[in-house]
Image (cartoon, rainbow, N blue to C red; front, top):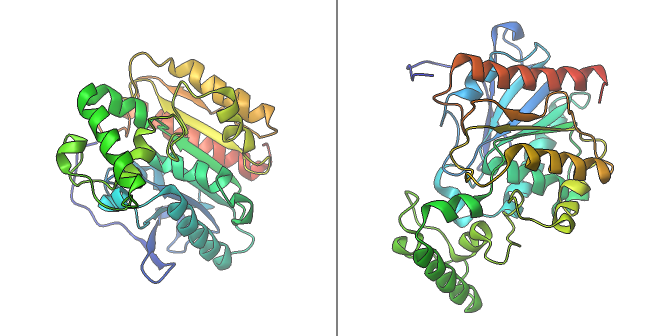
Length: 310
């Protein structure tokens, strides 16, 4: 997917005083936004048009659906001083806005990378029962920040970053920024002490720690096991995801998440869920065949939602 300058048709929404969302319109829409929306939430450092596949996916959706890229306070570099709880509150405002546009329409959340954590927080985190209902959720490239960072940071640098962050939080300075050297300059900007601990999750209980391969059954029951039966789940993980350590058995991990979801009474689209062969984290350098496989599974999931097959 080589970059080419292009203008995208669509509708810009102003859903709170400082936040917006962009609905991509394709030829099938005839210039009018459809009634059903896939609200897309990107990962760390990402926002509108940060990488190509959401725009390409938007062009492939059925005529009754549109992909809407959601901007949150945590978009782009904002993640470093934000939290999943704040993201979930803002997503609730976004869902309410689109529900108001068409009360009969369907709304699906689709997360990519850390956006998957936002989806889980929205559906299973604190006060999730008070948030507007949605009709489905797609997790694409759900990965563990703890495990990913553990493979790219020197152990001693990582250890010292945790010690410093804990000291800052204990001193009431959790919202203050860690020195860039403490986080090994991994990101283009520094990170608050509290968000760093949420991502690194040294005790395996950080707010962001939804997808680590070593989480206990009890922890998974408190997340996947609490997904509402009225919100079907589709998991699209990538076989060649560069952010997943080699020791993680991706196939078994997805099967475990599916099993816990079903045990808790949740619904999973097992026909379209799974590990996508040869797919990378954000599909940016993947072949057309691989990208098509992901898109076909998304479209298949939406069709099953429309047909009441889930």
